[in-house]
Image 1: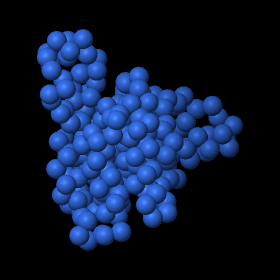
Image 2 (image 1 turned 180 degrees about the vertical axis):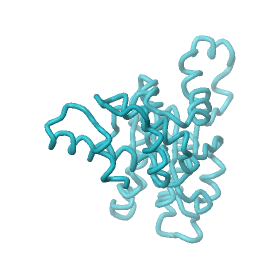
Image 3 (image 1 turned 30 degrees about the vertical axis):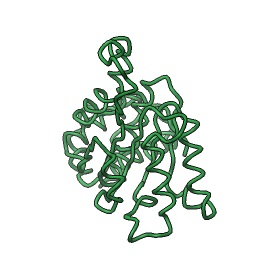
Length: 241
């Protein structure tokens, strides 16, 4: 799964989630000298940095994960669960082992419910869940700095996987104020002649963050077709009317 370049300040409308994630992942790394003085015997504590992101598609889970990776000078791996399922029987577990063995930073697994359903309900993925638990428990010679799981169905996850997720961040449906913040951020990336966003915020009441991003893809095409070097209201009106 290709990781896009997303900066921390690119993420808007998720301030609570950003704060919790920063405190958990970035602060100990940023203040590692102080942390080394604080923790006298690090080998004695099993500090789990396994985080569960839950929420509907398009609420910013992957985007925030990409952003926090930009703050950590480590190697990261983004895995789509379908990649694991597409392996031959037994190879899915090996694939996960290789991912965890070759990553020093964050392992992000999207749609984790696909491979980590309750084992009694999905026996075909038992070996994958078992391997994932071993990876989370530090059974390998090396261990990533953190694991982030993203899911739309937290209740369907295996209980043992859920118990390892010491932090659970929820991503609610996007509000009007969040929608406005996302639109403002996207407009800041463009030359435009739009003075007020209120009408666009109202007309996109049922849009998620991903759909808002797609608006700008079409808007750029509209501007180029009209030989303009800026976005205008008309680039959006036909899309959201």
